[in-house]
Amino acid sequence: MKKIIVLFAIFAFVGMGYAQEGNKKLTEEEALKILEDCRARVSDLNTKIENLKSQLEQLKSERAQKEAQINSLKKEIDDLKAEIAKYPTEYTVEKGDYLAKIAAKRYIYNNAKAWPRIYRANRDLIKDPNLIYPGWTLKIPHGLVREFEVIPGDYLWKIAGFSWIYNNPRMWTKIYEANKDKIKDPDLIYPGQELVIPRD
Image 1 (cartoon, rainbow, N blue to C red):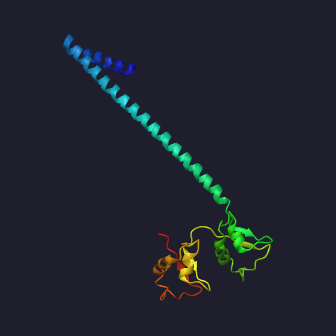
Image 2 (cartoon, one colour; image 1 turned 90 degrees about the horizontal axis):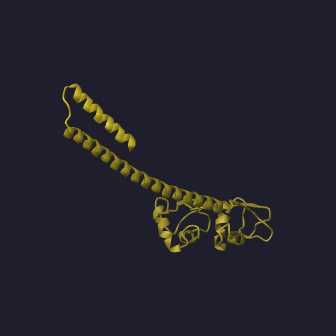
Image 3 (spheres, helix red, strand yellow; image 1 turned 30 degrees about the horizontal axis):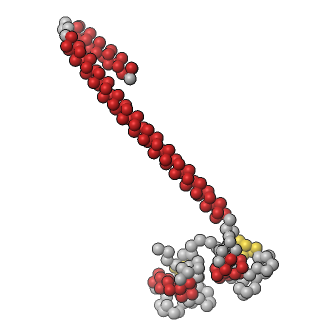
């Protein structure tokens, strides 16, 4: 602020000097008027500076809040990644295992009724879902199913009832509506058909 006052004082002094060179002396009233104008400008500039300082502090506060939110989200993402990493994509069969027992494990599906999902993902290896052997490495699929391959014994009611599909057999019509181009009769679906599983 002192620099601003000095600059305006110099400006006023120079202005007076120019007036004197033109053989016209400033009156005391004119000089005071120039000084008052300078003070008014300094006051306006100081007001603007204070407003800018206030805005700057507000922006700093908002930035700090955003950084806190970002750090919180990063921690949440890291926690989720750590949790996801616990869920294996493969499982090696141990003595005494059977599909329902494997599916019931906490970091598999935590749901014994989800065993058909393991069976369906490993049909190249498992010929009979009641017979699996120690040492076998089974694929363990996770995530939302958006496509579904029909196998012998499937029907829309059964598919909709799977825990990893809708867990509600009555929602079979949703699958039917999404696959009318493939399904002419909802009571007739065939092995090998790829059905869309809508998720909206």
